[in-house]
Amino acid sequence: MDRAKKESVVESLGDVFESSGVVVVAHYQGLTVAEMQDYRRRVDAVGGTVRVAKNRLAKIALKGKPCESIGELLNGMTILTYSQDPVAAAKAAYDFSKENDKLSILGGAMGENILDVAGVKSVAAMPSREELIASIVGCIGAPASNIASAITSSASNLASILSSIEEKATA
Image (cartoon, rainbow, N blue to C red; front, top):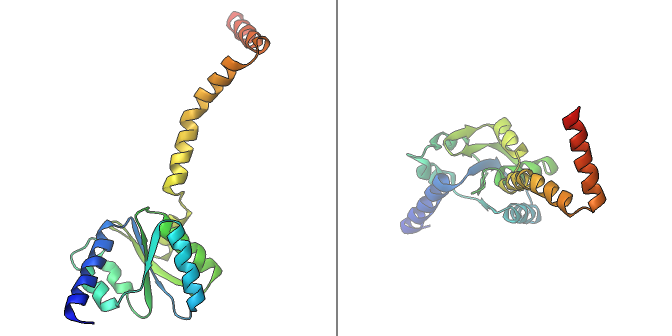
């Protein structure tokens, strides 16, 4: 790899370390090509990326970044899994490592926060951004849905609701 290519790799890795919601570092020794392709497909399906990079270049890219201390994890056959969603890559990596013991999570970073293996597991247990949005929308929409169903119910149901309210008010 010539110098210009190395500089390009360092620059792109620097962007990954700065802009990703989460970066997970793992050993992948022993994974077959088919297993690696399966892992890449799973991570890609949740909006993440898998990247194998030279440890030396990744350490150079980490210099001056808030997550610089994850450079200590970059020894041996390491793989970087990252995503904009702070949960997606961690969840995909953790789920795959439970099924395939050849992928061994070493740790990672979530912004400025350095994660150990337990930290990656905790992040993986969190609901994803989409799940949180769906939950919030459900909470916001529930009262409106209840009112709409009460208004559109038959007149007898509405009359019984009003009589119940009247009974409670007089009691």
